[in-house]
Image (cartoon, rainbow, N blue to C red; front, side, top):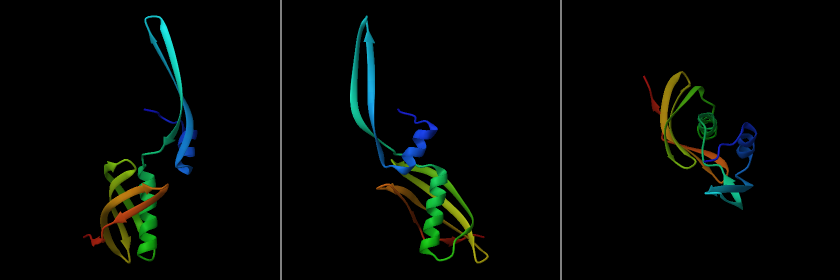
Length: 120
């Protein structure tokens, strides 16, 4: 498991993949071996903040005016680059809710939400 630094995370937010050189060193009973390999580091996680932005963008583009008081809760990870979410917001004085999935496809975040229902 590789854990990128803050600078690495910023880079991976802009790029789909980053070329890196991995070096591994193995030592056993006085014998030391090393290996280098060129690989591509691919980002396969989404953050709750990214999910909130994707849901807000989807609600604005698909249903007219933007939502007010948008609250997005991550329910579960549905795979690599995918989150199951629940969202609640206010539009025209009504409280609405919906659930769906936020995915990263070809470097773009998309939110596929069910039809909103009115909450009491």
